[in-house]
Image (cartoon, rainbow, N blue to C red; front, top):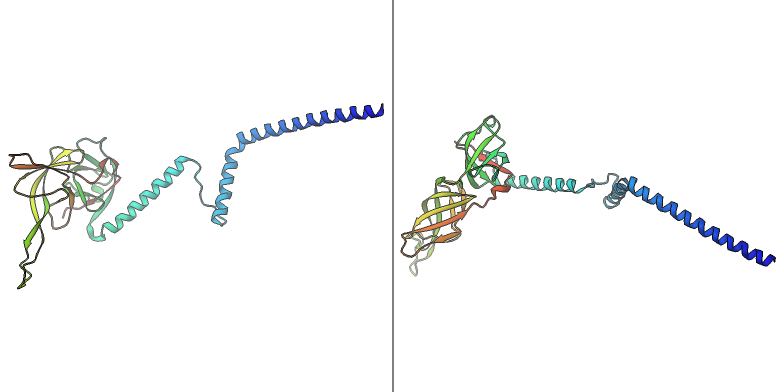
Length: 267
């Protein structure tokens, strides 16, 4: 009898023990769920900070972005900083250029124009030339207020500007080299004056007599003692029996994503 009672006692103990385990597991599960709901974010931040501390090995863990917006902001600031640093190397201190931010651009502005955040308070005047990346000419200041100015782009439809196409001429005799055995030859540049017509959207058109030889890639420059680039010839359309060739090119600058420009004062 005592043996049977002992077995019964052991069986009841096992049942009681198994029920206790289940209750404990349920309590732990509920606790973990509540901990995840109410403290998950703070725990994640703590883990990230600890990880940063271990990686950096200092008492000041680096800043860990909490969400995608902060990561995007950091990346944007890094890109902006790199771009502004690059401008320091392209624009000499004595260039007389003023850095300006673009606050409105196509397609929000009509007729291929920009609005920039400098104006008469910064001595900006109508007719000042506007550049991108320090040496690409993109337009002129057309109107000025106290703290803003409007830039009319050269590519604006109906705009006509004087320019030069720099075309190398092969096989020109070099008289500066005297030799009794041969006549040397080298490439020389031919600066062909043209009228460049804006077609909108950063596009340009040039009509040129066929007897003037140009090729794809020839630079189109502003008529100046400085090298001021407008673009490069991309398409040449020479129809049979036509006296003129039609040339097309596009500004190398994407105006829709332009953030900064440089304004050069008129002398």
